[in-house]
Length: 135
Image (cartoon, rainbow, N blue to C red; front, side, top):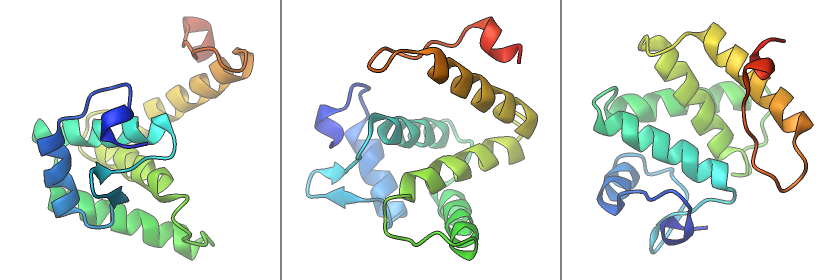
């Protein structure tokens, strides 16, 4: 999956700046590549937060590098398949560290998402409801 065939548009110029600043981003000749839609969405969230000035790409690269090192120390085989899991973990840590949200709110939202996913039929969109947060 490349920038040209994801459902949410990503500014190609912003994506180019990100891939120049963070050379580890998986890419091909067209730009970043993603195996799953959620990876493109995590990438887009980081682009949007960078564009809004929440962090520089240097800060982001350091946070992502720390997250990858943490995962490798915990046994991640570093085959590339978990890259965007590290990306998401770094994104969550950064928004909590910058005071955009708290770790508790992130955990509640993650739990609610899992609850909503468990009750959603395969192939259907997952929709969060207030009941998902009541657990």
